[in-house]
Length: 358
Image 1 (cartoon, rainbow, N blue to C red):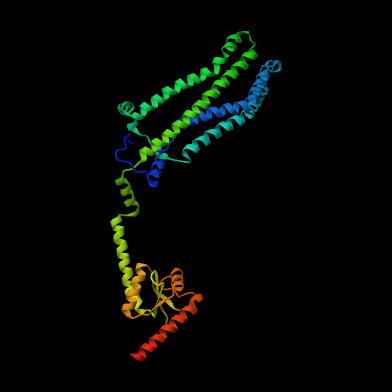
Image 2 (cartoon, rainbow, N blue to C red):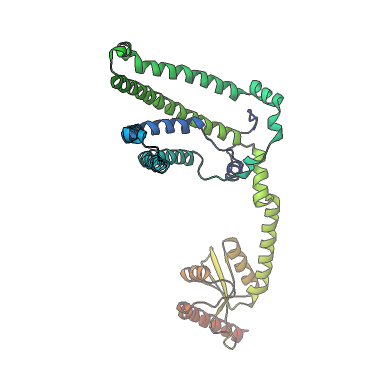
């Protein structure tokens, strides 16, 4: 991706992040894996190194013993080699398992499980030396990376020196020590240097990983137009969606104009909910919901009912309950039979009184 984002000021969407993840664009620091592996090996060697050294010592003693050097039987020699290899393998097993686990855990912590075969596809253009030279000379990131590497070399040299400057006298006097003492002193110095360098590299690698995540976030940023285009591709054009909603409302209003005049009564909240009910004893077991609506639709139902001469009855709890529990075309639940029967009886009584007065 280009170094400069231009007008890419919007945070990347979840889809943009997933596409980048699928293409292998993941924040990852190789230095973090190397530093963690170095520290892990030092800790494992501190814990299991003595067993490995003891095993190797026994193997050397066994192979250089008088009995081994005086016996030229191939079968015995082969059995001895296998026995020594098994002993060394058993001693090194915890060390090898620990190294493998550290490598897996560090990489999973950075990138997770990401199987991407696209990265294995040969890219002939990447072999173009001119393109590589242009990228090397013209990329700000390459300059930053070279500067960080140079700084890293200086810090590593200073850290290594800090581990030995207090032991210069011991190193100079090593010629007066025995072989075992020299080996012990050398291993202590090497361990101290390696441990300090490992801690330094781990700190630098964590900083590099944070920088990689920040740089990836900058690369994935989108312009406002890109966000709009993506939302349009995922959810459809906003203008089309608005038109669809308008058509759906129109169809719903047409159904209301058709069904509400058939109702016996409209139960209201009185303003937020409206439910139109119809009951025919010869065809229905219970009153049925012909139409229902909330807010604007409830207002339309009331208007149609008034224009059609359908009685309106205010029962707020009953209207809310039927609206939430019943769909259009459903019969009302049994727990509402008594309340609705009372309302219908009242409506029928009004209708008879109107006919007598008519």
